[in-house]
Image 1 (spheres, rainbow, N blue to C red):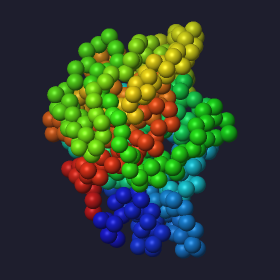
Image 2 (image 1 turned 90 degrees about the horizontal axis):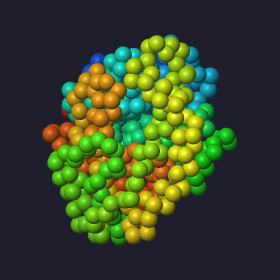
Image 3 (image 1 turned 135 degrees about the vertical axis):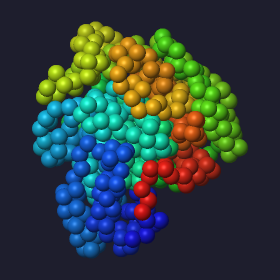
Image 4 (image 1 turned 90 degrees about the vertical axis):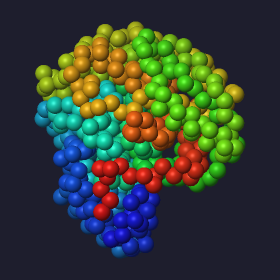
Length: 468
């Protein structure tokens, strides 16, 4: 099997259709890479070796019969906050969780497209932090430097892709949880429009903050996974119009007006921008100007948007923690957040939801003058493993704000964003994000693909990546 022709998601799907490789070969290689990296990178909470190989053999029979689906026989991974029939959904928590009876809607759609889920990836406890560590599974490490975090909360998904275990993975993003690990592992991460990818069996996840989205090494692969996962369950309340992400990745975006923003929203804490991050994002802005776009600095009118984020986030933690079989095993910071959630779940939560329309109008005013907003994905390069593990709740919040102040407002708005590699800071990957108004994924994906053709970030592989 030629790995050069089968490293990307689209390349694997094409090789399977053309008979150059079998699904069994691809899945077996992916499982071998899990074994090769699990002791160091530690990306996976659950591995479905026997089931995945059986599904691969069935996929090969279907391919031999001439059946064609977008991802038939292609191995992928999903985050352990997403239901997969026969497996528990522990969401980073310790304890004995029951196996789920059926797939979540996003997984159902991936499997309907032919994908084979090789495993569920690690995430921090209830997705709260931009690091992927906890007593339930240890520490997930960054394939670019094993002493550093890959980010979170989709850190296991990002690490699995950056380490070469799978070509793409489905994560979730409630405050940057796809875009932050994408930035810190040199991947493309898409936070879609709220409702683009179903969160069912949750009608809304974390009161509308959290959406599911792909991580991959290229824009085209991220678009392919997004198209496969996108769509709604009949019970979903958010039903955005359909898009064609792969088609968008293959066309030019046209000449765009791009605003560059350096100032994060007010968060009542210091969040200085690391000089290397500023240089890297500034270099991307220069590249966009060279590609013909009109680029200038401008700042969104965020207002006090944090007052709408906190009640939704804390109430979501409180609700999810009720599903944990043994709450005594939860991190003290989780228990404190859960208590706050119970306090904020009434009037404060209702006010937060009512404020969204005004926030759309105030922040959306920027898009009467610009097509796209460019910001850093994070304020710093990835922290060291353990840097936030033993902090108090207050100090953890301060550290998280300092490292990651840029991503979460778009979760409040429910609008799309795409994280792209921007370069390196202190020898570690850093990223930028393209942000847009409602339903703007096609434009953001098209712009990211144009930039990728210029920057060719996918040509560099992480030192811990397995390629043979």
